[in-house]
Length: 225
Image 1 (cartoon, rainbow, N blue to C red):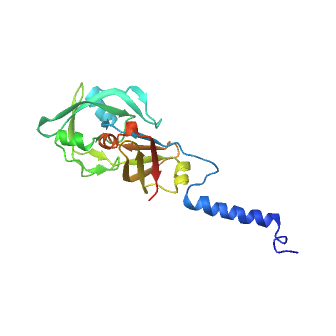
Image 2 (image 1 turned 90 degrees about the vertical axis):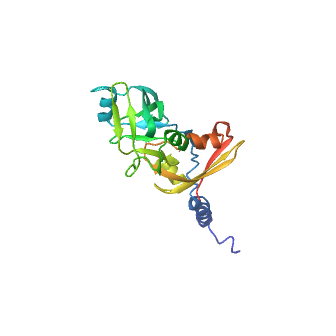
Image 3 (image 1 turned 60 degrees about the vertical axis):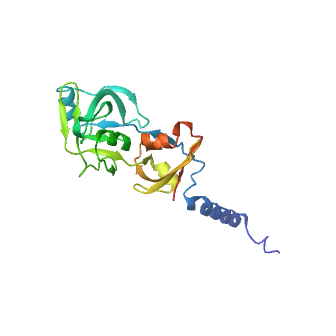
């Protein structure tokens, strides 16, 4: 009896499965045929507010009204806007407020916006506002002087658990985004943020979107360094 004939079918299947597991699971790219739907969106300038600040800017008890849901269904763009005023009375009017209200107020600008306002903004993860500059917010009923909270949000990717497993990453890891098209660009160091309810979505700001000509991109891909 040959050596080949001595190997059972069950043994062969076990060897093949082991090879496949090493080939696909080992590189973070296997999930029983799962293919993530990668969406890249430009996150334009916007404001997050506490209910206290909404009350001051729009009137006591005022509730933000939904204009449209964002790609992440937990958030919405409101009908309400405010003016943001920087040093020496430089101003950008009609900056959209995103809801729902948060426990802190925060203004997210591109570098170009910040330069226009005369504010030296740091690159921060959303919510990391200690030591950041402030600004003046003006609404139809009042104004709020923020002592901190103006940032340029660092590029990041939202992921659900399944997407994180697919790419082989976890919260606070870093990835690169490759944009193919007329202006091929690789944006490095995207912060991975995870939540069970999130859909796969990359956020870059208007400066990055314009520089890479994102609206004419032919393909986008996330790469684990």
